Length: 271
Length: 108
Image (cartoon, rainbow over all chains, first blue to last red; front, side, top):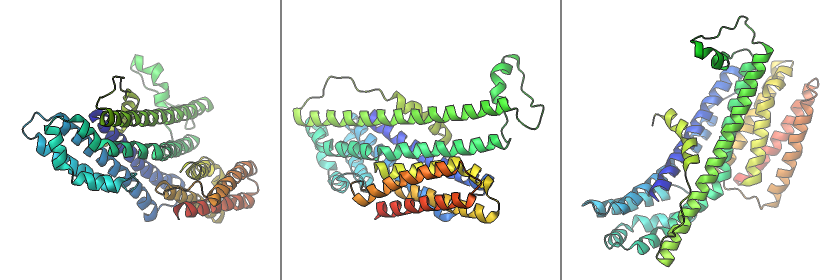
């Protein structure tokens, strides 16, 4: 639960970063093409970004609770469980789309003591029962909202592609990186002899932009599919533990597709 | 949230891809301003919808989604005839108008 919740928190933070990047692209589009941009447009993007950050905070609160559950041997553990449960309740209350979110929030905000007791008694089944509805709601919300996450990524890449192609068409792109594979082994860098890019180089740049855009969109689609599958599996496992008292033996799906997609956005965010 | 958001995304992205070409075909700043206004409206419709709870089962929304698809095709077709820029602007204005109606319906 800890690694899935942690990955989900990073995923939402990366998606919030995408919206921030989209805002920068709209500003660039205003500068290069004169497309109007005012406070209303910025506010729209700020609101979407804030919603994604709330989801990220909610996933991080779930990570903290999962860590507190597993770190019970420490002397501070009971207090950690109580605090983490209350924090998760607060974070859930901030996400209006969470199915049954307000109920789960109220329960968790007041469930700290009872969860601590279950944890101290090492009663995993009761702990799973207490968290089962929250995990199920989290998984359901992700599945419902997944088309929006995919769309946010596609429009960001689509807008970047549109601006990049315009810049190529207006001869505002340095083709140095295209020539690098041939020149780097000899410590040489390129020099474009004329002001205008040759037709061949301009076509190559366009081809690279379109190809990278398609690859980026496919990478996010794969990551969001994997995240969706992992949350469904986590929900199933928690439910099975809650109802049958045992955790299934099957392996947990790898989150590497999600981590690979998140990585460059974390770097950009300075994490 | 499926078809409604998808239709608005398709319109926003189609206009993003064609924007430079359409602006270049405008004979004066007046036409360019008209195109820009419709482009910004399309972008706002899209972002408005991202945050809303969608009601795809609403028959009016389904009808608007169908209309949007037809309007998208008209935009694609008319950009092949940029010599008649007034007609192109009319088609874009109609299409974005349907998008605005869809966004309002979804947001209701």
